[in-house]
Image (tube, rainbow, N blue to C red; front, side, top):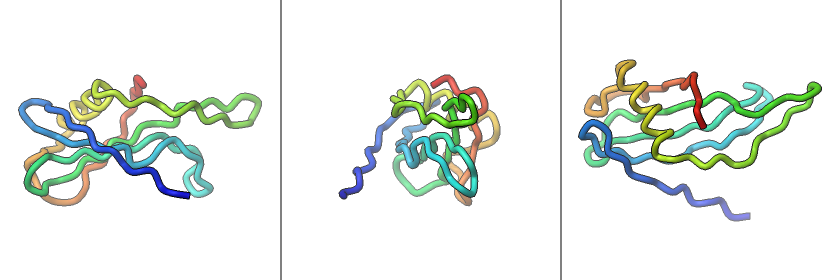
Amino acid sequence: MQRKKQTTSQITIDGFELAWTVLRDTQWSSQDDYQGITISVRRIGPERRELLLKYPFLGVKPNGKWHIPEKLKITPKIVETGVREALEAGWDPNSRGRVFTWFVEKAEI
């Protein structure tokens, strides 16, 4: 079975040209239980600090059984909202260093 190619989209926020990719779709993990999507955001151009936007699991668990929702359509507006939250929290697209992970609490997907 072939792996799907990750597609990269571009967005401009506050003058920063950024590229984003969905790294992980909603899934279940025996170690971490239910996980939401993860989006990688990087500045276009010289290699700088990456941002990981981690969204909460949006599925439901009726009667103790789990249900993973249909594949979500990630829009630039959803990414922009998460990036703006991370910028307010201290992520600097111009800085270098370790990956900045931001857990998005209010997921409006």
